[in-house]
Image (tube, rainbow, N blue to C red; front, side):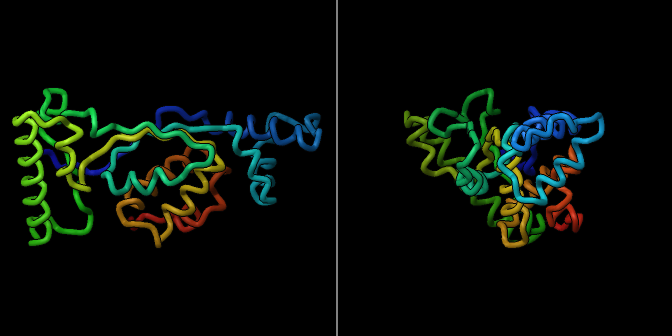
Length: 216
């Protein structure tokens, strides 16, 4: 059994300048003010668009992120449905007894327990029992989709998410908030911070960026 922390990789995202230029070009079509486009006009235009609430223009740019998290977090993430696409590793078809999975299951480390605590030890023991049950079922000719019934909520999953910038802002607003699940914040705050780093004008107005949140 392998125990890991959540992680992410931005697979596809235009650079910050290109994001702003695309949005400006689309947005100025609404006002027929393309003649006002200059080499440095995009950032100010996008900030005005966001401030005015004309967020539909942000849908013209998308970004794709690969996220590794536990199944519980992924179940919350896939509730976002507008302007978004998901592709997730399937426990129906993934056979964790195979070589490419290291003949083991991989689980996400809980962030709230010290590894020396009784809670953590109980969790780790439960993960080991689940792995044993899963592997034994496969040895007795159960299919992966049958054996997956004993896999834990902490099982690591890989999910590729593509969304437009309007929806990413919505995701961040909900999933980085203090009311969100701690493990959701653990992965979503770093993703938002990376988005903000690449295109500050797109996210400067959001609370997580304004407050420079790191206590996830």
